Length: 108
Image (cartoon, rainbow, N blue to C red):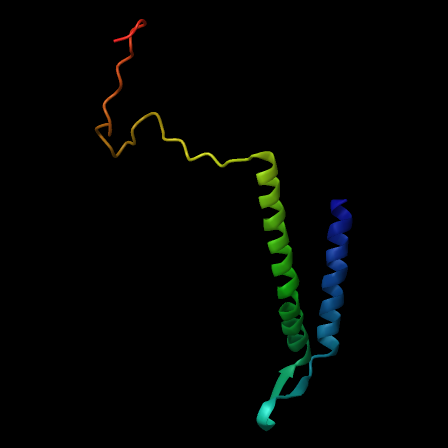
């Protein structure tokens, strides 16, 4: 399966490279107030492709977040706070709190 995925990406890369090679010319784009932008066609298409990709990516991320939040609420999943290490850090020569003495059975 990995071979097919690699082969697909190679075909896509070669196709894009051939498209860029055959269409590498300046394209005028009419903007507002008579301004004209001249850009290479492959760069212009790539920019607008990425610009059009942003809204679906945002929608996908929002949907994943919402579904993950619903799943955690349904299963009662709670994120535990991080555990403190049992041994003091090497840079901390003294422990921050004194150890607690064990309580003998039967009370104090």
